[in-house]
Length: 285
Image (cartoon, rainbow, N blue to C red; front, side):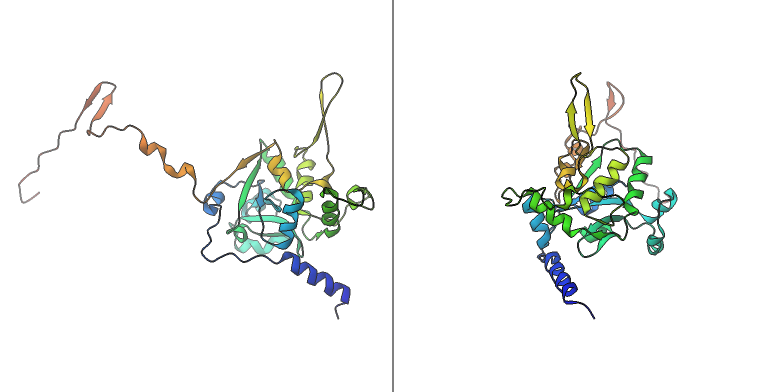
């Protein structure tokens, strides 16, 4: 029998994660097919989100992005790289399905097909010049978090810390500034991804200070303070957008000043209109 407390938490979670319905004829702002063609394993995908908790996150962070996921490729690619965990064996029957890993309220850290976000407003954030070995290590790091619970306390404390009208100082009774020995089995989406990139020393949004001699020093930022917009803001990620109607789809090469007179050239200055071959009147041809 489920306890009253458990029932209340589940009910509140369902209310928070309820998504607003899309109009049947409402087009997505993203060209999903082109985005799929562009994606590479190791890319971060930002999601606008339509749930109540998404709206809360967008209000808190003053950003359009409420969620971040990591594109990990497909099962075949993961298996060849030797980083496909046993928990993903059910994807072996569809080895070429594009997959993402994410941490969701009510579900924890899971791997799902990319197609679940087909109708959403998306943006690609690509880590610039990330090596193949480090890319695989980033993916492996996140796959090691499969089954982790969603850290709702961290989300609550992050909201309290970021809101400008806090009545209680952010550092008081906040999990954001607690440093405990051992590894936590709870996380949120941006923290999990920032941790994976920091594991290979790839900067997302580090603290940079200049020493007296003019040299620069990078400092690791508190991983619990990361939000989806940080990947959009980071100078170390390239931003790739594919709107539903792309201006680059106008095929500008078709508007080059091509000759319309039918000339063909052997080389510069040696051009002529090809002579048509005479037709034969023979009935046998």
